[in-house]
Amino acid sequence: MRRPAIGFAMTLPAFETRRLVLRPIEESDAQGLHGAYGDTEAMRFWDAPPSVDVAETASRIRQTLAIERRWHGMWAIVARSGGFVGMINYHNVDPRNRRMALGWITAPAFWHQGLMTEAAAAVLAHCFSAMEMHRIEALIEPGNTASRGLAVKLGFKQESDLLRDRLYVGGQYRHILMYGLLQADWASYRPNA
Ligand SMILES: CC(C)(COP(=O)(O)OP(=O)(O)OC[C@H]1O[C@@H](n2cnc3c(N)ncnc32)[C@H](O)[C@@H]1OP(=O)(O)O)[C@@H](O)C(=O)NCCC(=O)NCCS
Image 1: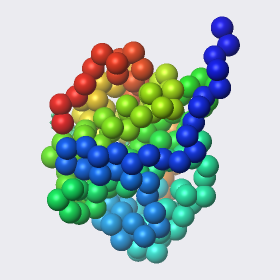
Image 2: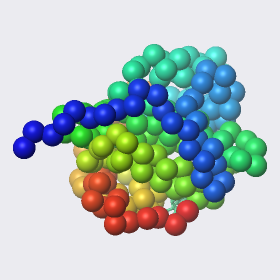
Image 3: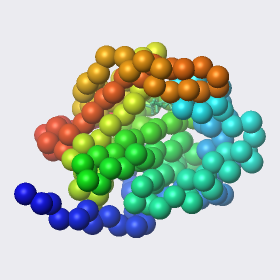
């Protein structure tokens, strides 16, 4: 059966959760995002080296904003109580197969407080409903315990053994694990932040 075209909104909506506001990222968020992109530990498992300065983080935001929302979208995550928490994005959108991948990062000061669980729950709901995705992926390095735990908490299943040398970052190849979450999994599962 031929499915109708995906009705992508070309702008990102904002979301409010219990402790957070998620809104489309802007170049003026560079200083805040640099708390994550400029931090060596936060970027240890990222697919690019840390930004050397706020200007490089601003440049990365500009590159993001230059891509159509159909293919890539990034939300700034801000604490209602104040403070720039991090960002969450979708990328690798494959409309034919109704598939995309998520990326997530928080600044170390906000780690392990349930904040990305809360942010990702809002984004997953949007991607599965408004964006009509069937499958959402997360590509995670085996040593990234926090990201693997987050994915499992959100209902993702680990679906692969090591995908060897899948990434080349900072002069080194890196192995990856594939995690996947289906719309049907999500419909029957709600993580507690
Ligand atoms: C991965 C990351 C976004 C998680 O964000 P977070 O806001 O700390 O996540 P949460 O507090 O919502 O935690 C969700 C689950 O992740 C796991 N987790 C988070 N921090 C952890 C830590 N320090 N150690 C072990 N597990 C951790 C746990 O399973 C946790 O569930 P629990 O609270 O029931 O134990 C954050 O650690 C980060 O920014 N890491 C660096 C960037 C990165 O590697 N991004 C992913 C690239 S694939």
